[in-house]
Length: 392
Image 1 (cartoon, rainbow, N blue to C red):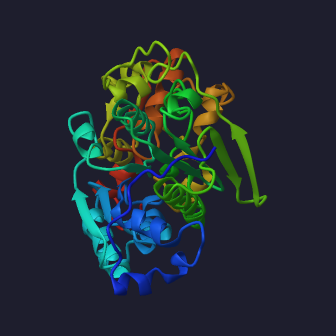
Image 2: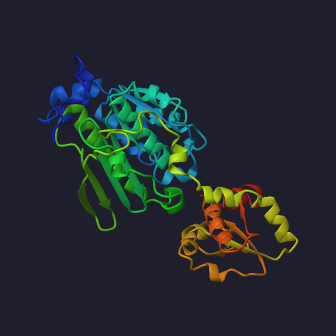
Image 3: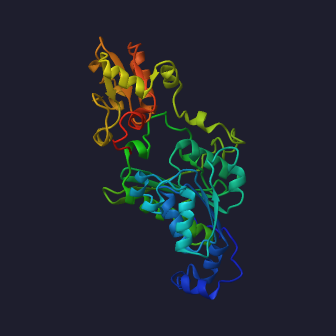
């Protein structure tokens, strides 16, 4: 459905701006009025990572007058495979500052506002209130639900995107004109059910594919042109080079935008999404060891059975000496339990300790009461024991 323009046009474009945006100006659906609206627009990009990188670059190139960036992280070498707004010389720098500098290099007429804080309940409403439109580039469920609920409560539209391996999704959520994110996903998936990009990987160029869709939708909303993805979910399969759409209807029973909402203020999103399940927390209590303790057991030739619960691709990148690879899903399916020795101490590890804690709960419930897991995972091991090895 077509929607009216989200913002009023600016008073004028300078001669330099006319030269810069001339290819927009000669498009009848954009023209001078549309470009003035972009100039007058204030867009907030949550995240300057995989999706935020292409989004910020193309929003800047398009002439969006004010760009806000919410980003608290620093640039890591593993980011550069997909986060193209950053470069080699930015490693170790604030992502927000790096993104700001890239935006200004692309378009010096854009005002950039940095919010170098982790987005949470204490700041989201104040930050969002200063913008016309939100572009969501987050990669975790707790922040996605936070963004959605804040946008609904403030009456703001936002453009959402998601990426994983070769697959991507995008939509526009605007409760006043259609469904919100909770209408599509009323509940977060169980902890550990959906791997993050850090766990499962992502094709770098997929970020550009989905990020460009997000920017296209943002421009359409700001200028009031075309048919935005309100009430539609775009699904992209890069391996098959296939796009398909799914209709998303507004849920009258939605907890936040339904007829009788039960979520009328921000909630505890970490608890709502169960970042680590209660079972995993209980299993890990008193059964978590450090990298130094594991190394000591190995040096003293303790009779342990060390299990890596990550995926084969992760194991190939870096592994702990002596670890046997049995992916987490094998435990969840029950297939791995018969491989566990009854007469050796079970030690589990993953990348950072989250997945191994979930497996630990399964293993303990199967009767291996003395099993433990490695806090900090292989990342902690490399940091403390074998710093010459790579991380990811």
